Image 1 (cartoon, rainbow, N blue to C red):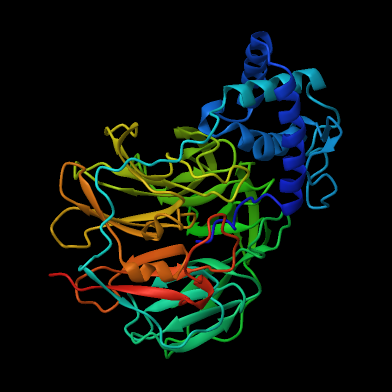
Image 2: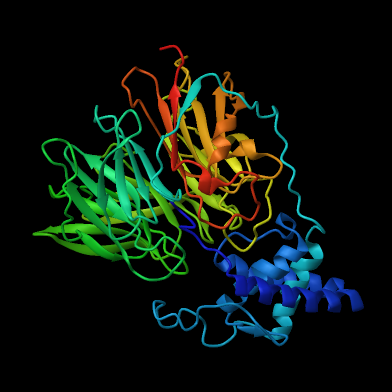
Length: 523
């Protein structure tokens, strides 16, 4: 799903302003040594103010320059500090989409206190960010298990925000959404366009039920605070093709929704909707209660931005659907919303991640075959205020002890990791992992864009890639048996039009909109 780009990104103006601030501050630091008392007091102040919103950031996560030019200018306005030492910080104070009082009316601290927080992070940070990722095995740049299929004719500059393998269709198994064209396309098994549908905005998720699709339209892909997103139902014609007209939205005025999921949450016989309104500076996890006659009542489960994907599952077997949700944007983590009945939910944070993680996706799957679903999690969204490579980006497995308490069991380092899917791709009885990166180290490790982790048992995974996958920049991925031969295939979607902080030797805009990796293994 297109999550961001779908997510926060510093503007050019912010970078310029921040660089000026860094230059000023560096000159000051070179003239005088920061006292130990300033550093100690700065740490105490950071604990008091920063930790009130999310996990306390460790200065050593990134280098001093990144703290100064990226993170601190972004955090200042949230403390009511819009200008410091004669330099204006980037902020959206006059954005009409933000609610009144979003920014503090007065600074939460004095300028001297803010300087001490800066002193703490800059003086305690590493001189240079640690970017080296240590892997047990190098990535082997060949993968006999899959054969790449590329469409002969493109549909324009690759700007794919969503891909899907529709196993229910023999004739039209591939679906993609194009951001620039604002169309959903269906392809046949030979990767030829056989149908298309114009949409108001980019589609980033589709829920398929029989002959009806529930489409999540994000509204506008790039970061913004407006409520332009919507959810629409599309009926398929008798020939299996899409009807070329769109009904009025079931729900609208959503804030950059990235996933819409239907479920009867209050057991009244009507399907409600769970909306991951990722947003930007504001957003929410909401559920829309179906009141009948096309009317929905909005209930807010968490009034904060960053909801990425939700999984509905009755984990306690009480007959009521519960909700698992991954959040990024500040207080990153996986949250469990237990259904208490009558439309009420309790919230529990199951896993907590640092605010710098860049959480990007999760799914629940039994990785060790013990009867309890574990968590497969990825982090690597680097479209934020610290765009340096991070050694903690990659694929994680958290094992369930049977009480929904999760412990990390496995980590595969992968710069800019964006999604992972666990399936038994080689049909040997255990789960392998396919993963993609949208912010890979394209200069030195272009093979990071797509990696297949072959399960050798005992959580020992060997990484493989395919050279042809370097032709695209993969934002989205799906798995399924498109040709119904009993083997699970993959489709990767190329969003080539977004800024890349590390340039590739490949011109992604000349690459395909998508690639199908056909599984040629043994059934």
